[in-house]
Image 1: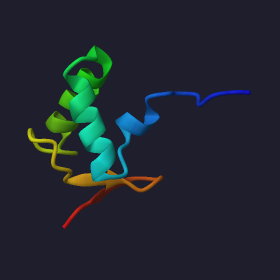
Image 2: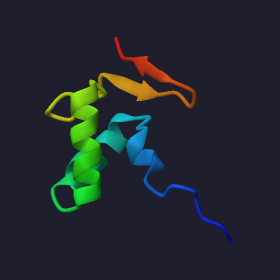
Image 3: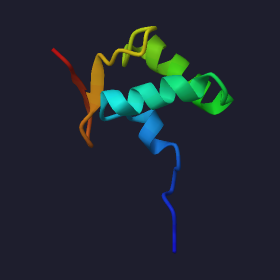
Image 4: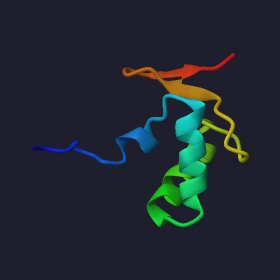
Length: 65
């Protein structure tokens, strides 16, 4: 059986608030998730509290309004 090409794809392109909370919680103890979380904050995907501003729809980032 073959796994995903990138096991952290779900974290790099979150599609839900649940995924973002998992990233935020994981960032406390995992440096890879910490780097991804910090990048999301810097690029505006989420705020510093982990609240999503954009979600990945499978093709591009969509603003939440």
